[in-house]
Image (cartoon, rainbow, N blue to C red; front, side):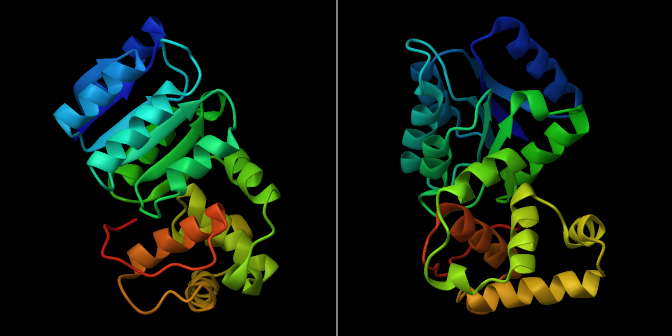
Length: 226
């Protein structure tokens, strides 16, 4: 799996390169500025981009802006954002096009290599990997609209865990319910969000994006498995 990595801190960038290579990833490019990131993404067309939000020259939002520009050129380009802070605007921009393959992790909450590598693989496969704090920030500013209001509190809990990238079994373990109960909740979520029968993995991602972005509804489109 080919990765383009953007991180301006030398030691962290080198550490990430070594970590990813040790887990079988190929580093297509490792850059430290926004313009370099955009060029690398468009030229290399990697399987996934791992991007810090704040990159030179201004250390504001160059990393995210470069990733968003690249997604316009390469629709559906998987992007995993690494940041020190929860930025609602940044996360919403990433979710706005309604396609999967998105993640937003906080650097100080990535506790082990396996967690990080799993998130990268999940995003590369078209799924989501959102830190719980990011989810909370996105949800606190919107109470939901349209079909989102139809969700029960338990269904919202299930959907938030789906956003983190949890499997049905993992959700069942976190909520102390059966796998069958989780499957039923997810089926209800699909129905209430007007996600008509299609590939369930694709509907899973669309449901997560609708929930986090406050969208009134989604129409399924072909996508990769979450």
